[in-house]
Image 1: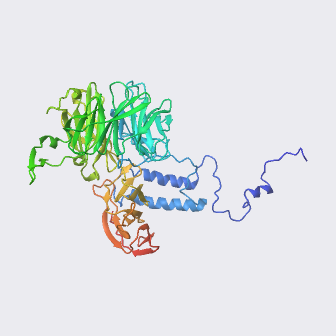
Image 2: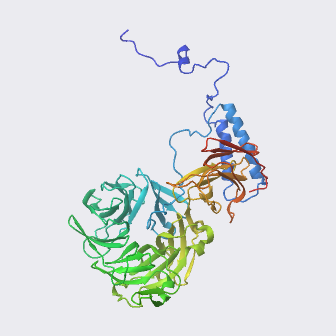
Image 3: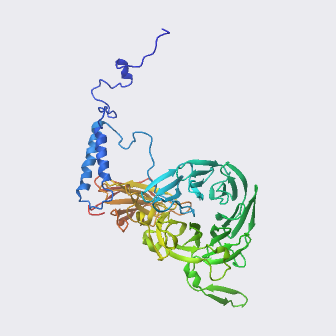
Length: 620
């Protein structure tokens, strides 16, 4: 007996331990007999036919009466019948566990700035940014995304270093919120080059050094610390306490000897220099240009000089020694024509200076690039959605006179994209050459603008003609999605390849699966939304409201609305059809009945509300 070998079970009686239903009159519904080799299972064939029909709808704007749409219902019935016959119980379950991320709607612009970059130019350009825990590389022309997936929490900072040699690939560094490491990776291959643990809490700002091939990496954490690391050796050279007040931005000097950089924020500017492993900071004097402290929101290096954008609408220049502010010039063209007036109070001893004209927008974004040989281009963005372009090639020779940096042109994001932009404050701005065929002063530029409303917009600029128009790719809208806090409700269209979402940004948005973008303007709701559902015909959606962000009173709790679904490509958003409020607490879920005659809403007051509805087939 000791020498007997165990044999694999054959097809005899012992096989019933594996398939005990063999020989039974009726097989269980969860089992499907295998199909002969080379043939597709009838259920999956029907499902594939339905999928192909959906794919043919991409780009179509036909009415509901079109035969294409009418055939969808019969195809869906066929899929259900084949499912019943085959015994497949879950049509949504994947055949394996290798789900592949295809597209991400989103860009983090609501609390970050200067976090969008171009790599390359013309048709070969890529837009690099981040969303959630992903580093995203977008091909605007082909509407394709690639992802860097090395982080374990949301990314909150990014820096790009483009080597002078075209044979060396562009590298990116990203930092995440909460405990975690700074990751350095190649933009082209998405390969991780280094993992550096700085010991900081939430790395909110990153910058590469410019004079040593980008070997050093400067980071600022939410714990008010500043660190410098050698990412190639994955070592931290120094980690020191920074400014106690909030720091909004920093920039590393691109000229001179050694590592020097400027940080700016709430009523302060600091000039930092590294000597060996010793990092020291000195205060930059703001007098006599400023008589009262202000907010400094962004900064950028121009050679050995630094420019700092402030909330008073002016851009200030820091001298090469980092000791004081020397000169200033206006971001907006309107600021250059203001006149000073003197007003004396009743006591006669206090003089107040006022300026005529409209208030100047805060400078919220700055970028300096050498797109053409020996020409430094400065791009500045404002809180009002304005973008200005300057030639700062001779900035070091400026003596503070009226003939400051030459303003090339300006444009307003809100005017180019009309009401499409919900929050137009510029958080990030970056440029590249639009085409390799254009060069010199007549070269067309592409300017990518990231807004506070989490929109990524592309503008084609011709400085010679003083023209600015939306870019060709996706009509200039590269990315658009929700902003502010969390997304709560999602529903898929019953027959079209579309879906809609609602959340804390108080908007209702409709997306196309094949288009990979919003297919209608966002509809402002005015209240926090928690749930959404299509009716069975897809002509309207129900939205449940309520909830709160942080502490405070719940606004709109119990409100229930029904909106007409907008047509794809419509210039108008969803149309409100009706509204009810029978509960005082959040509506956490809504559903239509199959015949669209009943609407059910579940509330946080532990009650279910049932409504009779009448939906016209012509709506939507």
